[in-house]
Length: 194
Image (cartoon, rainbow, N blue to C red; front, side, top):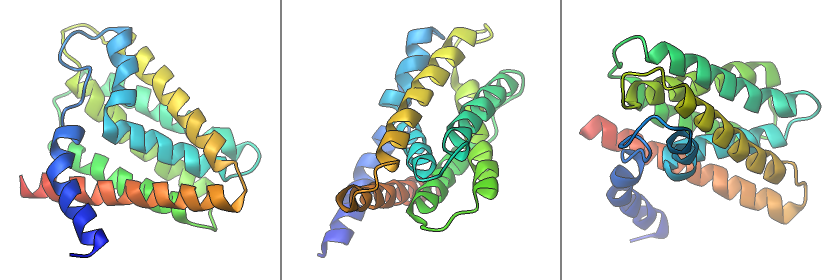
C-alpha cells in the first residue's frame, strides 16, 4: 500500500471524530467555549490556517483584508444562524471550504479580489454552522466574540507563516495546504457517505 493510500485510509478513520466533535458546543455559550472552538475544532482551525497562509502570501492591504473578511462574514452569518433553523448542506460546505481554501493557498498566481469574495463566503459558511450549533436560548454574543478572537489569532499565525519567503518555508506551506485539502476531501467523503 503506497503512502498516499495509507494517509487517506487513516484520514477516513480519524476524521469523523475530529471534524464532527466540534468542541465547545456541549456546555454553554461562553466566551471561553467560543475561543476554544477554533483551536480545538480541527475543521475550523484548518480553515483559519488556510486563510492565513493564503493572505500571508498576498501584498499590501490584501494581506489583512482576507482574514478580516473571513471573521466579519463568520460573525454576521453566526448572528443570522441564531435566527433560522440549520441547513443540511452547511457541514458539506465546511468540507468544500477546506478543499477550496487549501487549493487557493497552493496557487502561485492569485486574483485577490476574487479570493476575497471566496474567503468571505467560506467565512460565512463557518459562521452559519457554528451559530446554529451554539447551545442555549441566548444570543450567543460571548461565544461569537470568543470565536472571532481565536479565529483572528489563527489567521495571524497563518499570515506569519505565509509571509515567509524562504524556500524551505514555502515547501512547508505547500505541504500544509495540501494536507488541508486532503482533510477536506476526507471529511466530504465521510459526510456524503453518512
